[in-house]
Length: 358
Image 1 (cartoon, one colour):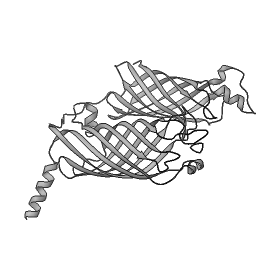
Image 2: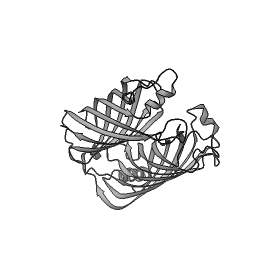
Image 3: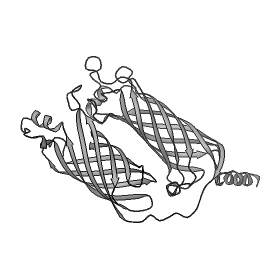
Image 4: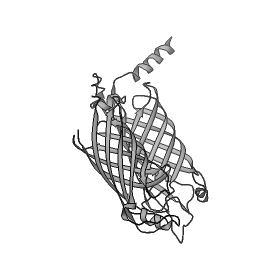
């Protein structure tokens, strides 16, 4: 009887609707580099090991999207990683903002998804004379993409432990060649501690978003290299028109028209013995794209898949993709940052500004 009484108090303690305002966490990772290309095997050494330190704030429903996503955590993580090959890769150091989403509504044991992206420093990138086998990373500075899913066990209102699986990607988006990129899969475990003044969850009814089509235009640009390594940089510009409609309280969908002017394409065409470039218009590519957007208030995460309807250069296929984020500065103006790829091959990192027509 006393055991049941203690158990009821234990569960009741987690049923509170008040939570501390600040959290810190430490996570250890143990994993390996995935050989997504045969050449990657040349630089794989031992297992990868990493330490991740996080600072975060729980959300309480002050904004509509926080209630829609069941009160996620938002924060910043710092990553220190040994890449398993001290000579050819060395260590990686990264920092990234993230969002940590609960995927179920359990209070004691919760299934979570943590997504973030930021910037990383790779100790030993490609060098033509001293590190020519490292065809994965061509620069010290790289983008970092972090995805982790796992289970969190609440030991008290302040302390939690976690166990998960993560995928960490390093790439410079073809800014410097070579750039096959690194994909690291790892098991991880950690502990987090929340402290500070407690706040109550806001549980007011959610407002329904209007289901209407919105028109958007965007101008973007990027810089890239083409093989061989350590060659000149080429400018890429993009011009997009989107029609996007609210699908549900959390997401939107739509389609669009893209135009890309990639100044490296005439060079690639002239290197191809079967094709030559005769005009700067050969740098032009036109595409149609489908869009799905995950919406977090002023921030949206977009996944796009498109196909070229016009492209004289055929070297990287017909299909292209974009993974990007948009931040609404005002009701009319938004900023965009993302990565354009052809399946697993990066094309360029894109920065842009857009305008909501209506």
